[in-house]
Length: 416
Image 1 (cartoon, one colour):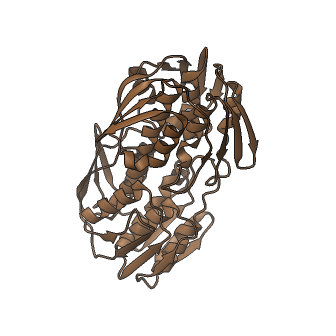
Image 2: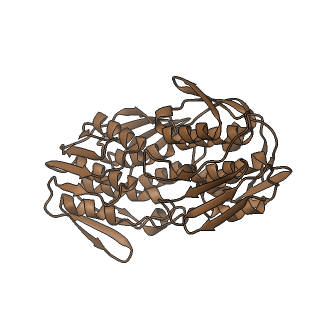
Image 3: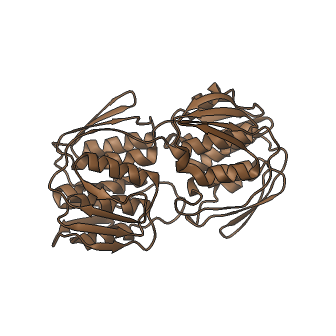
């Protein structure tokens, strides 16, 4: 199994281009199951999660072709409504095909999904939404089985603004008769991108980006060409990388409005940020200071940036406090950061970080996707060599991470 070998101390400098959003691409790929002809997706990142979703669509009967960063998906011959456990366990987002299959075929059987072990992510909100639309939902030995019973638009209130539940319900409702009103919906930019994609296919959805979404069911959806939005978490990771190395980096293909909470926090600790349209310049030359972070649903501070910011705060003078409110098990990277000399104390969902001037290179392992990114950032800063193992986690969400870092001047190699 490959590892990253990083010799820290190099200030990152230069320009890097952000790839398309993983978290936007995956639900859009699932939604292609609802089209009765070919869909062309542009700006698709080269990631393991994208490969897994391609395998899922292929198993269901779609044809998927890749040409550089373009996916051509034809679901006109999809004839399977069942996703078995061995496929669903490979990725959390596999659950998104259920909403699409119910919408098109009015029945589906999808095994409970897998994914990073960062905490409980139950399917109850998804199933509540399907039931409200008129589907009979049953759990049969770990398989979610749904069948149309008395379909019609309804009003649904989510107990929590779940991204996956919002996306799944939007897809299922798009081909359900009547008007569905979804309240306390997730507001992430990826929800807006899914709405835009579905509407271009012929759906009638409005309100994405707000906490109330209204979906007027239509009879059919057709193929389109669509370019996915830039990956805001990859952009944030490179912003943190520039800060932790005291570098000066120009980031291209970024929507700054999608990461305003992160931008505000970086500025609070002393990072200089300037922007002009689709690029952002990050400078971490000046001394940085400590700050407190609390993860919240969008537009609050993203939980997917918490590990990377914890790595950064471990190198900043003073005491910082991080409160994780989204996932109860998202501090698994702390033990690995401690191997590198980080001074972090955990009390429940609160991390107390006492920054120090230097971290030390060590052999560490990624425990999940964003934890792996945090360890890479720590390695870029640390004295000596850091070896980051279990890259299968990082490969799920970062497109050629080591290549992009190397073009900015990082001393990083990928080898067995």
